[in-house]
Every structure is written in structure tokens, then in C-alpha cells.
Image (cartoon, rainbow, N blue to C red; front, side):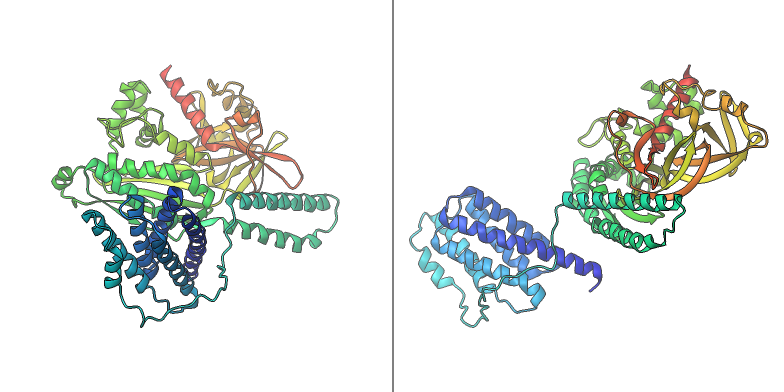
Length: 570
């Protein structure tokens, strides 16, 4: 058995044993009050969940008995059969057998359950027949006549021992609090090391503390990691409902289910993924007639995939549908007065596709249950960018579309590049950095009001970060104030430090004063009133004890792109 299979087994056992104990409590409550609708509903819910979990793990005996108990309580809920002392006693015995089967997963003991299962099934059958005939008097004789002889069964007697699983469930908030405390420990450790180094003292004695605290930090982070399969497997029903609503035949393909990611990230992006899957069915997949005419398989495919890339996890939602028609999008953004025709004609295909993430935009020709309302893709973008991720789109007309969600693998710790602007330290997460370039003044060219420089056979826009930070009105940026005016003051021979940032397929050069080093940081949210800053995503504490702002590259690029578009329209 692999380590992951063992982990799933332990998770199942933990939940199953909790279910068993809760069933015992509810049966006691039900014995006292046979009319307790709350107890009946809760027992039905628990045995239904236990049945599903056991089926998923391949524990057929547990699923079989839980299914029979579910049928009985379904009938009780619907008023099809009465609940009397005899039935309650039988259900108690069935629950004991259920507990024995759960414990047998670990012990390997043989537990016979068919006798009580059959007794419940026969009771249910006869009670329903008696109810239909209006004759309740023969029920006891009928049960006695039809009951299975269980005298030859191996009966497992309860020993009175209490079973414990090898897994302890911990509330997520408690784990988050613990992780925050360890984060504070790491910050304080780095501060002391920095302090001793500044005083010229040896820091060798800190090495063991550094190693132990780092191992503790990563250990707690790993506890919060879950496999993508936990999220992906929930989409069978989502896809089925969307396909049924659109009257389309669609198959779900799962890949990369073993890739791990921070549980909190999954929680944040789960709604976005639901929208993207529904969007793939509604917008991407053609009708059966269109697929037949195109020579495609009538059953379309939507694929969920996950991959590890550097410090990121990339989730890919792809379909083999019709792709994104950029000509149609261009027509719509002009018709909806998002841009003028003149500006639209100058946009690249990638820039046109980015408009699907604008609030209110929809490429659907008509409103359906899952498309055409103009809501969703902008929420996806905001959700992903709120955790330092980015959304990329790859599409080919007639072939299909892939949406790439580039996400940090953890919210607790991230790699970043530290640098200086003026006398202030800043940081940019490595997920937003393509490279670092060193250029001279004559390598930067003026194009219109802005600046460009050649990078890997491309011309990239470049701005001086100091000018952007000092801009008071981000809604109306003077390109000369963040570019040309700074360039004029630079010596010809001076080498400029340019951080080439990347986001959503776009590149931007940021000129900074001094590059420092790469470092793993713990980013904290901005306190009020700074949380309204559009240039910053958070802060971190350096070893020196100084506060270091973390730049929001996604927001900076959006600000500059919108500013350029407004300038072109005017």
C-alpha cells in the first residue's frame, strides 16, 4: 500500500469512527423518543455519507450494511414504516455490526453482518406490504417465518474495548494559528541573526535553531497540503449538471490528481473552478450537430489537470470545443463601448482575449442557465489574483481552449526578490518575475510618451518604479513622469537594474535602484487604511525588523494597461 493510499485509509477510518460514535448517540436519543425527526434525519444523513465514502474506498461490506440502514431510515422518514422497540433494537445491533466492520479494516477480523442486514431488509419489505394492505397484525409472524437462520454465523461479540484511529483531526483555524506563530518565530530568528551579524558576532550558534525552526515551519505547512484529487473529484456532478442543462454530451478527464497544494488555496479558488468548468460546457463545447459537422467525437471532453512548476501549482481547465473567436470578441467590446474601433484594431489577439475578464463582458449570444449574464470571468481573475496567482488563456479556433490558473503552492511562505527604491526595501514574489536585466541608457528607447527596451527579440514597456510609487492619481498617469523624466537624469554609462515582471501573458520592465537578494517571506495583509493601496498586496518583516512592502504586479500591470488604453482613445 502506498503512503497516499494509507493516508486515505486513515482519513476514512477517522471519519467513519466519528460517524459510528455519533450514530450510537443518536440511536440512544431515538430510543428515548421514537418521533424525533431530527435524530431520524441525522442518522439518515450519516449512513448515506458513510455508504458513499465506503464505496469510494472499496469497503463493500460497510457500504452494503450502511445502504440497508439508509433504506430503513428513508422509509421511516417518509412514514412508510413505524418505529417500535423491536426495530430500534435491531438497528442498535446493526450499528454494532457497522462498528465491527469499520474496526475490521485495521484488525482484519472477520465480522458477519448478513443476518442483521437480511432481518432489516425483510422487516422493511413486510412492513411496506402490511402498510399497503392495511393489515398490520401478521407482521410479527411474517418476520419470524421469513427471517434468515443465523445460527451458523460467526458472531463477533463486543469486548467493551474502545477503538481509536491513528489520525487526529485538527480544526483548520487552529492549524492556521499555529502556522502564524511559527511564522513569527522565523521572523524573530532572522532578526536575531541579523542583529548578531551587524555587531560582528558569530552566528554559527544559530544554525541548529535555524534548521529546527525551518523544519517545524515546513512540517506544519505540509499538514495543510492536500491533493488536487480532493477538489477534482467533486466536478463529476458539476459537469454532469452543466452538460444536462445545455443538452450536450461531455466527459470529464482528470489528470495530476496527486499534485499537492495548500488547502486554503483550494478553498479560495473552488468557486472559480466551478465557473470555469460550467463556462467550458456553455461557451466552449459545441452542440452535437456542430461537432458532427466538424468531424469531432460527439462526446466532448473537459479536462482538469494539475502540474508543479517552480514554486507554483498550475491548474489547467481545458476543452476540445470551438475555441475563442477573437474577431467576435473585438466586435463586442467595440459595440459595448469598452474601446473605440481604432484602439481595437491595434490590439493583439492576446490583448483582445483579456477582455473576457472585464466586468459585464459575455461572448454568449443568448442567456442560458449557465452563460450569457456577463458575470463570472472577472470574479475568477480577482479571486486568483487575490492570492498572488494569475490566469493565462491558450486557445485555437476549432481545437479548443485551455485556462491556466498559476497559483502559489502555499499561502504561508513564498519566494521573493528583495530590492531598493530610494531608501525603502520592497519585494516582488518570484511567481511574477521572468528575469532580471541590466541595461544602459542608450538601450532604452522613447516610443510616444513611454519607454521601451529590447528583450529577447521583443520590445517591452519599461517604467521607473520610483515615479510610479510617487504618482498621486493612478487613474491618470503621466507616462513622462514615470519614464522619460527619469531617463533624462541618468548618466550615459550607468547600468540600470530592470526587473522583468510577467502577468497573464504580458511583460513589463520595472527600473529599481538596487537589487538585493532572493528570500522566502511570510506575507501579511496590509493594515488599514493602507489596504486600499492598488500598488501593494501586503507586507513582510525582514531580519532587520524593518517592514518591507510587497508589490502587487497584477494590479500595476492593469493600471498601466488601462492608462495606455485611455490615452490612445483620447
